[in-house]
Image 1 (cartoon, rainbow, N blue to C red):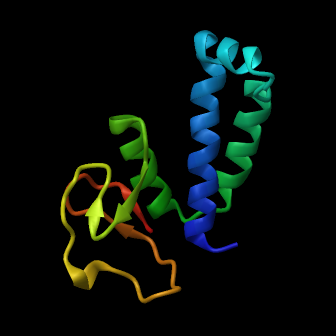
Image 2: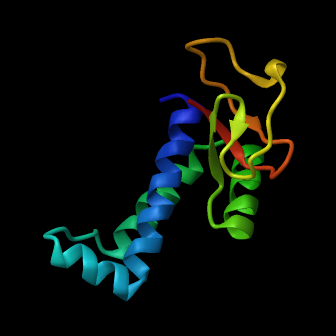
Image 3: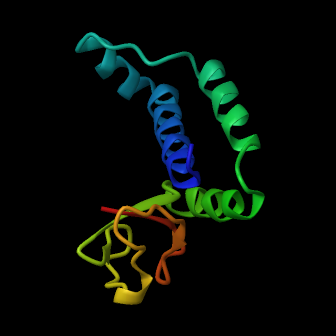
Length: 113
């Protein structure tokens, strides 16, 4: 699994943890017929994944997660959707290539769309 894909999976686990820990959101999910896995299971899966990641990138991700509630941001048409900063063309990875980059504006890890 590529590093970018692993961080996307980590981001999804973190968002599920937020959903599972909020009783109102969990109740809404149950009303429409979905259940979110128990928080201890999600925490264990998150820890298992986090151990496999580069500590430097994980530190950047977790710092932004604590500050903004999301450690990952999508880039669309060279614009970071986290802070709305237009990124330079040179910041874009080659087509079909998924490398980790950090937004110059907000510091989140970038996922290019």
